[in-house]
Length: 256
Image (tube, rainbow, N blue to C red):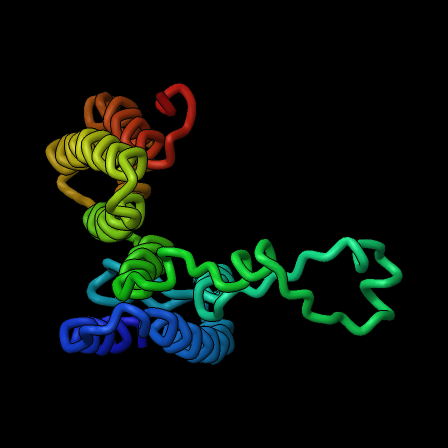
């Protein structure tokens, strides 16, 4: 459903010339996310009977736990799109500032210069056609990241999510702070990707596997037979991967 929505949005964005129709794309995104929630809810009961299902030769793994987190991501994204799916309407008047009057008094439109400017103001996010498309790429990367059970699929998913976030940071193209933040995030994201790739490559060089379950089994068997030569460098590889992930989420001490 997400891939179909992304394809339709790509096609419609390429054919549209009116920037004021961006608000309609946000509403289309809301409908698509409702359908994604419905599909994940159905899969929740399908996978509940089993321990889970492996997909694409173990690259991804779906279970009731992953479906719950998918639904959580879809609901949060739906709320985010809801903020840009409808124009804001604000009414400021000192006559209705108390809580009781706000509840039990019929509000009236008081037209003056201040209120008119606030009501008619339209933010830049309501004229960006690609906003919903970027958000869908981020959602797709997040959903795949939760279901990943292989180091390769984890890296590809987090990169797919990061590319959408880079674009989202630079959404306000006329803002110098927005552009600088996006460029800084892109450069540091590329640096962290190097750390993650280096850790994955070292794990594959030492163990010959990238599947998480195989990695777990080999690590435990080496501990049982007291063969420390196999797992000597594994903690350092995991440290490199952890450093890359901490860079990605800007956690201390990598938040600088």
